Image (cartoon, rainbow, N blue to C red; front, side):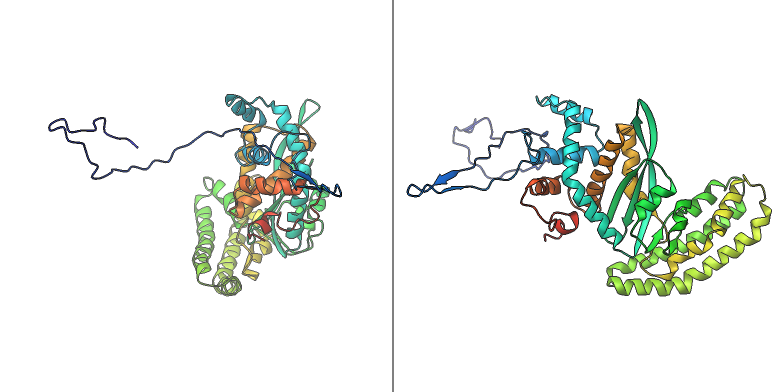
Length: 395
């Protein structure tokens, strides 16, 4: 509150009286603060029979560590949500007068992953029980014997329940794909990478990938690419109009309406698109021509690009999972590589928890600060209420 410097009138000498206030609001910011919190356990005994009773104190998140749950939640959120390498976090803490080497921060993460791994596994089990998922993978550089090895983060995503699961494998092989998808037999939407061909369930293509290939070839075949892209745009136009109904209809009713409209409007356009591709195919015979690759990409698996029209729950493309993966690309620019294969597995667990929180509109900092002490408690026998799915609904 800012008062006038004078308390009396300069002209007549009478005491000044307040008649109004001008109020201006500002949003301010205080940098993160470190503080010590004492956790006091009171022990009592009966003076007659010497029976001892003690208060129940929360378990330390990491035994022997002086750091609290809020600090560890901030460590994980900063690293896997804001993509700050440990050495940068160490520098930030040093500015506040707290010396924590980046190696120590990395060791903390290795301990924290033991607590969060069961949560990640529960998320995977929830995903595997569904009948429709999206799948993709992205590269991750891993330091191995002073050389970098290109490993892979494989990702499962449910665009309806907003769950995502990351798993690290050291290759992009069929074996890695089979291991990752083991236990899932439902409809699988992918970018048509060859390892997914052995999946026994329904395969669903990604029209965004197909469209992208024709956009890339447009300089060499402008007329044909324009016609194809326009047809695909018509399909997306139908989806855009259907999305507007989500606020008016319940999910099951919306799925049914989506299916009906797709069968009536989208299927004829898809048939028209296929006829056009077959018609122009012989005009592009050079194997390395971008147009040849784009046409073959669609025609060899055309049924998968039409599969999304067989049920209202399926998406037209894989864009949802690509948005889930995008933070990995941002992170790579900051921390460059994982220090080991074990560190890469830690990344996968942490990304699973953080990204699922973000998709469910949960603040990862608040979630982790709440559940980490509970997960560390030896009395914890169930994950009920501790996964982002339960925590978000307050169960």
